[in-house]
Length: 248
Image (cartoon, rainbow, N blue to C red):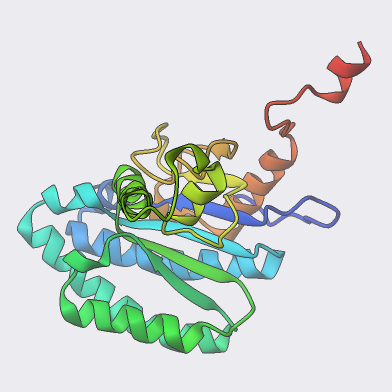
């Protein structure tokens, strides 16, 4: 087991995004139903969010349910929705305990009405908490998000409130679900898979990526620490030259 490390003096990412991958494989490895793996994964989310807060992360976004996840078996989707209902209730308590603001991104209109109501209640309840901001991506797909954002801008053009040539990158960012949220500095995908899978594609243009082999339910606070250590080794130039190149 990796040991916890001292992050004193390190650059802590302001915003960490996580693709929670490996719940199903964890369940298969432990010879338990897949939804047990998802349940264990939700417990890991709770622990990692608390640890992220403790080390100074200000925003954490988790990819909980994608627009493509509806294609999974009806039994698995029903299990995920039941888990989501329970988790949203727990978040009400945890948000108060941890001074945690909670937000949900994605197209919430396809979710059952009781889930939409729970989301609205959670967001309203926690809106003034100023600790870590915990963002859950539900029925989220980056292409769908961009499509919805472009539609908003197109409606403004059609209403003659905006000229096409006046559209800026900032306007596009403000039309997305993540309006007002800084772009992620670090994106983690567990289980060794190396792809974005339609997650925060606009926002992650200059994000640093980290792909540990561990399955999500086995991911611990010390693993997050290791990701932050790796992040500190990166030279974030945002398209510019590094110092050594400039001096040469």
